[in-house]
Length: 248
Image (spheres, rainbow, N blue to C red):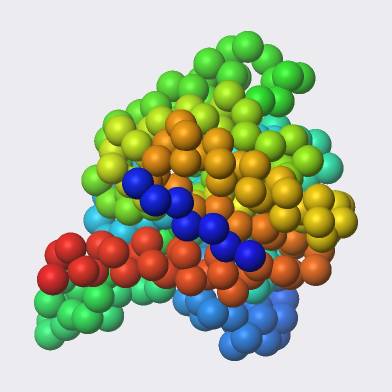
C-alpha cells in the first residue's frame, strides 16, 4: 500500500569482487537495475563522487533495515551487506544504477540519458557511536545536502514499530528546504498484523500531512517478504526520471 501526500551499518562489494562473477551475472540479469554497482565511499566531502547525472539518497535510523531495503529494491543479494553492528557505516557510499549512454566520440553528454545513482548515507541515532563520530556524520551529511546539485530525491527508511522520529524529521526538513521529493519506507511491516500495519501507515501519513504537506509519500515495506518492492522501485524511478524531465 502506497499513500501519496498532498500539498545502519553496511559493507559493500563491487561486482566481480567478493561476489562470484557467475552469481553477479545471474542476479544482475534478474535485477531491475542490471548496471548496478558500487562506485566509491566518501569519508570527507572532497571524496564525493562527481556531481553530475541524478542521484537519490537513502537515509534512516541505524537498524531500521536500510541495507536490506536497498538489496531488495536492487534485487541483488549482498549488494549492501547487512552488518550485525548498527552504526558501522562511516562513509557516504555511492552506487550506479544506470549508466549514461555515450554519444559520438564517447561524450556522455551527447548520448542518451544521464548516469543514475543511489547514495547510502550513514545510519543515524545509534547511541554507542562516539560523540566525535556522530559529529563527523552530521558534518558530512550537512555538506552532502548543501553541496549536491545532482540530488533529485530522498528515501527515508523508518522501522514501522518506531514511527517517525526526530532524526527522520530532520531528513524531511532537508527535503523540504531543497524542494526535493521524499519517499518513506515503513520497513519490517511483516512484524505487525495487517490491521496494525495499515493503522501505522495512516498514522504516519497523517503526521506528514500535518507537518510536511506535499513533501513526501509513504508506503509499507517488508524486505523479508519482499512486499512493496515494486512500489519502491516505481517511486525511485519517478525521482530519477524527474531529472530527465526537467533537463529536457
